[in-house]
Image (cartoon, rainbow, N blue to C red; front, side, top):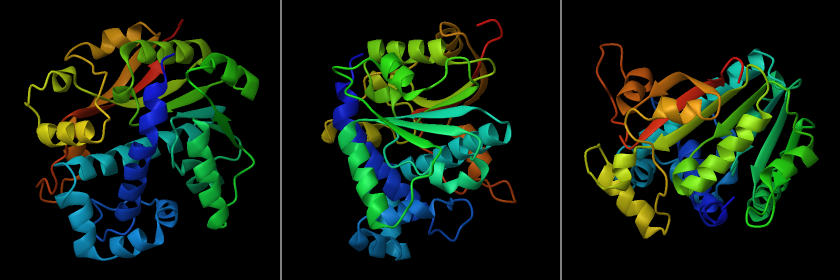
Length: 298
């Protein structure tokens, strides 16, 4: 599995996601507000102080950031939060978060998660940074949370999951948030092959992806040019996208059945529509969110 993209990019994307969630937790508008107060504890003190100032927060997250990406990150957080909580409510045996970065769901939803094992997969430097931040903030690591560190260039993902006790017949939720677009196609295939191998009956997968047309620089979606310029400037050019109409065949290869497929317009209706039906925020149009389940007999 060619994992160098994860090694070099997860820290940057993890930092942006953490800052966005921290900022969102301070919003007064329900459309923008999410509940990740732990993320606010993890950002540097000077930045936390700046985020508390509404005008500065808007400058950092909406004006300086690519068009619609703050709204997208908020929508993605809320969507995956809901999938995570639903898995806990449905009694899933285990949850695996790929490229977990500074994800705080295992802590935030701990009251619901006592009977579910949560695994966070990432490279060792990022996990060490997270451990250090938790220790500094007095945050305890739950007993049902296990960290799996991996060197993607040298270690087998399947072997690491086996060694960590991740069950192959258990009902599992696999979370791939802000990850696939940074992987080479062969790495995406290898990742989903492992999911196919380890997904027990009635397991589920939730992930986001970018449209393949974005990789061709078609320029047909809101905020596309801005986000493409941003990732290129950071040395994080996207490597993988899915063509229009190709999602279901992609999932079928890995014994997965599509349950939900949401584009920017869907997310605007779900999270950024006021009582009068007006859209209060535009969502960056380059990404889509997906929830799929293991197909019967798969």
